[in-house]
Length: 225
Image (cartoon, rainbow, N blue to C red; front, side):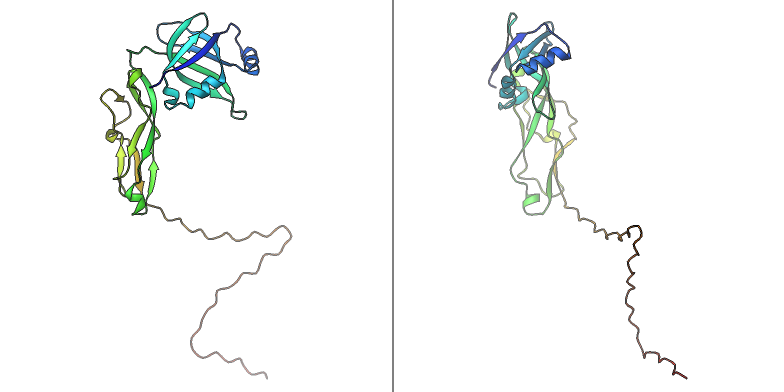
């Protein structure tokens, strides 16, 4: 797993107004915590955060965090906040790590191959969970867990216990939890359209009576007197 360097500057101003000014100046307020060190409030370049998230390992990338006046430390990007409208970073949390101490992280799941249950049996492939929680040394964090579905037939499933995990990685999810399966296509129920409701002051539409087919001779009308 490639190491990424992120430069951070310490900050002394706190509060919403201070954070707002930092974002306006093009910086992202962040905090460094965990391990044996103290909590340090810092600012980082939003481009550095994008570089981390767009890397192959994504949020699980091992970072070399260069903090001005504090030296360097190994860390991971633990969490971050993004403005839902402007889509710019609001805050970031960096967690210190030691390369010889196990940590818990979330790893994405990627599907590989084409399932026969979809290709030839008309089923639908459903990815039930998109990530799993694992515990391992930082250097053993997998970038992703690939699930091969080339042997997956209709009404068959791959569970957590079936995932290709090395002995260096401990999975924390329930081993019986379904990861991906192929299910039958459900027929959609046809619902009859509701009768139109007349607007206020409008006469209701005439009801169409069902046609009744009668057998036998038609009854003659009585002759006029």
